[in-house]
Length: 476
Image 1 (cartoon, rainbow, N blue to C red):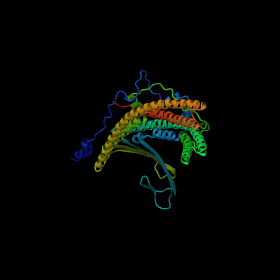
Image 2: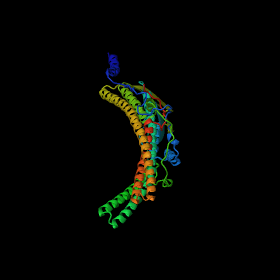
Image 3: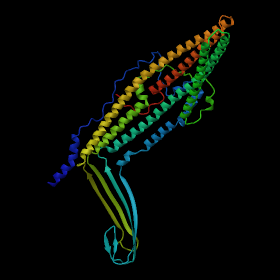
């Protein structure tokens, strides 16, 4: 009768586990389009290279991006997190543990009999002073009967994959940001030149208007309006200078510095990129984007946590044992060497707290479903982001072409106006106004160029083109 109760007690947790209802690993498959709709249709297509930025003709920009690899502090922090993930070893919790210890006792007998504490033996004290030592080895092992060792290994691998993807995600962000800031810095330098031209032109117009005012040809209001335009041009010029300083400082911060590079002060043209037409597919983006890889790793880690939580509902078998030796140091309280060997298996049954363990497993199950949902959301967001950035990049390219043509037209108008001025057909104010229009068109074109570069950097980041995939995917 007693043996039946023992069997029932042992089997009860296993029977209860069979009654637990879990969702388990959800499906991660997502229906993806074959191609992106917004990408340009060209005959020759190439995959976007992870080092696409090397196609630029700007050596300063190349140098900055190469420095980011070693100087950017966010990237360094991500690498430290990766090292910590690699050093973590959750599997060691399911390996046998072995500890060794030793102690020594020194006793001075004043009266009575000698007592050996570890053995509880009383002997006649033949000597006044005695001493002995105890060397002991303890071993314990909670046997991973339900795959806990492999589950812990899966969690470790997932955490490493997450940290690796995090390094790539940070690298993608800082490279995209560096390209954007550098383009805007160069654009502001070129804008300053045009702003100076606008300010000078408005100053010339004020001089012409002053002459007319003295001759009584214009009113005070008309003269004041021309001065207001000049003051506004001066404010705009100072604002552009302030924006230049801001971009230089932001770029320096990316490099982990508090001072911009000295070579950045010399004005230069915006960088250009000699890139072949590229058209990565949604499957390529799925493989390459680090944020998707992070989401994948989160799912794997959550799956491992769920499996470990389930194993907590099962009985646990622990094997424990010890080996010790006692011997004399001085005197003779022991009758020669004493060797002790002990061992016993222990079976732990989660009976009274089984409900708590079940609740924890259900929490982990829901967490797994949540991370799987986050993965699918990341994929959908990535697909939509690529479509959006493809559209904005193409729009930026079109805008750049339009502003360039407009800039050429206004510059020709300046040349024509100057010719008419020399022939006495146009006056000085008309010449300066034509120059103002040309400078403003040039600024618009400069901003369009910078915007195209910014959109290109955003698109390459969305495509995952600054990183190489380094983990297997589990997308159907």
